[in-house]
Image 1: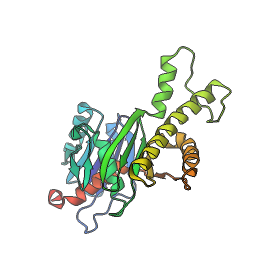
Image 2: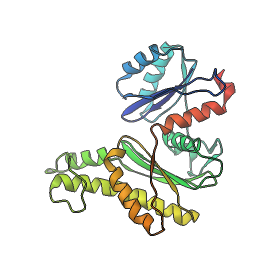
Image 3: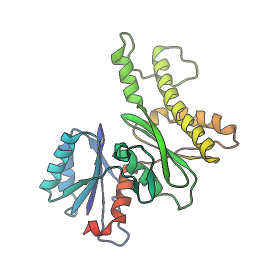
Length: 268
């Protein structure tokens, strides 16, 4: 059993892959913990039906968090390999000026999307709404063209509340013309997230001459999806088709599973 780990800024997501079967099955459902509750990881590992042989993960929460996770895994006889972004992995080409600078979670997520697609596919963008929002584009040639980073929905809300004297932590509705402060903040956050997605979708259409698919991920998606879908429908109508985002639960874990499956010698 190979443990798959996505150590993010706020959440720790884990799953597994069983290399002993020819089809290398995955966990029935990945598990997410508070990133600071590493005792939960210890209990989860202890309850597994098989002793894990190794772990493959990405960690964007800092070296201290990575070392703490590694220590817990070691107690269960399991060493971890932290994956990083490369110039090319499984046919995906990285166009970052310094490939290793790209967040390992972003790279793994794109590999996770590709693992779901046929060899011939349209361009796609993956919008992930976590602590930060990232919007990354891959062409039909499997070249990662680049992407955006902006504050995620919760970070935007907290920045307004903590950086100003009179603005609250907003819990308002998203409406076209807000008439109270809570609505104004909620609508502004959704508009900023949606505008960034539509910007990259339009840029992808212009670059590739065809309509990009859109995939979404992250815990902030429920807060912004209605505004994003509405704005995409308006933008897509100009080209005769409104794109509908496809939500993915754990694209980072999917990408790590693809890496593990492609390297059977390392699974021994």
